[in-house]
Image (cartoon, rainbow, N blue to C red; front, side):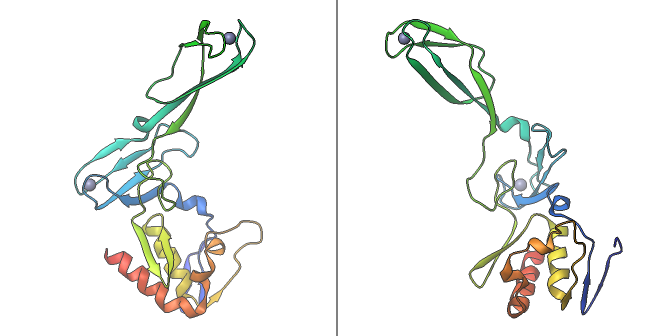
Length: 203
Ligand SMILES: [Zn+2]
Ligand SMILES: [Zn+2]
């Protein structure tokens, strides 16, 4: 099952899950608008990821975009009314929050919860998960958007679409190609998809 072999009429690609395609993302550089890469060190760690542009040498660390939302939810110790304070966009954890109760006006110092999140460049759907930069490999196919996280991902989609027969590679693992949207799998779109992949590879 690990052999990589692609013939004209049979797709025998590796049974990768999409996890294999989420360690590197090709994105539009926020400085020069050419292709840059987002490298993820670890899937779980929040601070290790970085952005590298080999065109303009711009780099940025994922941890520089971490912000904290400080929040307090509790009953006022003076009057018992419930207090809810949320202050987003702090570059560092907030240790103490001075706040006066809106009901009895008694001042108090709270130790807030600090919830980390990442400041994203844009809120679009087709972006990398760290910086929120637009994916580089995006192309219109008859009104749908063909996209790939990186070049290997794009080439694997091309291999798959090129094959005329698709083999279900394993019953247990959901592979990347099985999760592809229907417009990519549709035989009638095969030429349009391959042309779009070709445009992206020349981009
Ligand atoms: Zn750049
Ligand atoms: Zn109060």
